[in-house]
Image (cartoon, rainbow, N blue to C red; front, side, top):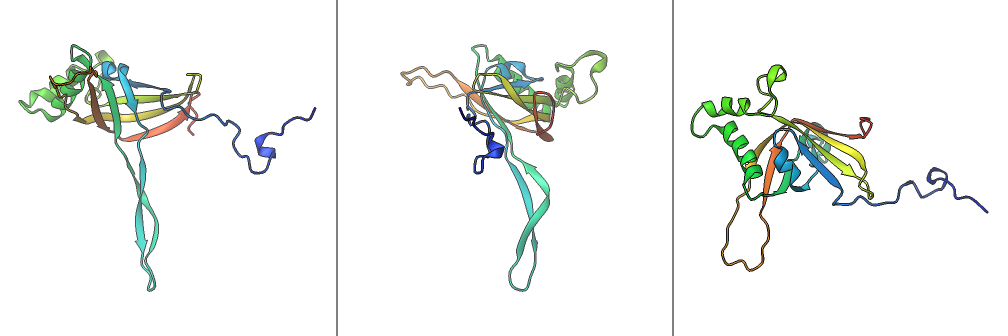
Length: 191
């Protein structure tokens, strides 16, 4: 019986694994706000945009790759729990960063963070690290997207409506800025 050749040996078939990535196969972890991450039902790998420079020419300006990458926002949608615990986790984080009522809210935010004791340094509780784990079709972790120095800047509204006949549980959407993200396999090898 003939054996099937590996994809690298067959012309025109460069892919060995022909399974598709599932949109439901992910886990999200956020150090500073574990409750919002626990109820997360949508997350994204943000976009990358490379700036473009123009090289002038007497016939036509030519676009050439720039040198700065703009990272898109990390957006998270999560189910809101009945006690508003996860919603308030994010809201208090944003309020602490913006200190809308008094200047001490920023220091209160830093003190109320998850990192305490001798390991806590100034500012570690203002930012957080986040990890998006990408799972295979069998729900086995395959890849991780690691986000460094995450902070929220936008939290969606929760709109109550007494005329709704069907109950749809509340979800909230939060947008984060971050320094950089990296993709790696489960052994920590950068892709």
